[in-house]
Image (cartoon, rainbow, N blue to C red; front, side, top):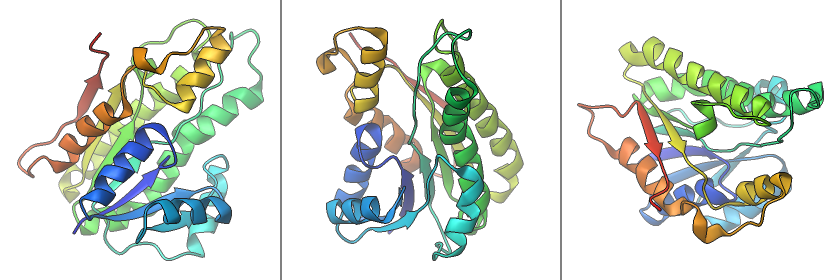
Length: 229
């Protein structure tokens, strides 16, 4: 039975991945921002457990996790949580930049650092759910795209550094996916949101699970999931 740690399991792609892994009987460790959220998540996925730490304050994650029991072995670390706040470069405040960099880039880097011993012990897999914005930036997406471009760099460097330890690293680049985050983006863009026009989170979950289930003789390094219509 494999053990997976997931950020962002409460909605969207993260919820789809967590449900699929839970249904097949794998063990789940779910990252929660506070004790109340931890209780909600573990109730949704009976038998799972939660680690409490706020991704919005990555400099405190080491302290938070030092007071909790980390797994000795970890088969996968799935970075799925993310935030977005659109705005033109001339209007974005330092707070808006920092908020997206903290959650989308610095928190994954810090969690990976803290859990690398457990991943090395099981020759595990790190998955970063990125975005099309991690490959190309557009107007009003500067801060979010910068955080996702940085996440790609993190994944690429980690893959080379940990190859000798048997740790696999995959980046998944979904197109616009039906989720609460996508609804927020549409609101910021002033557009009407229609979930049926976007990728189903289940489709992204299928792609992600294909990567982590791949036999050990191969590795999916980068995987783009684009709308089919």
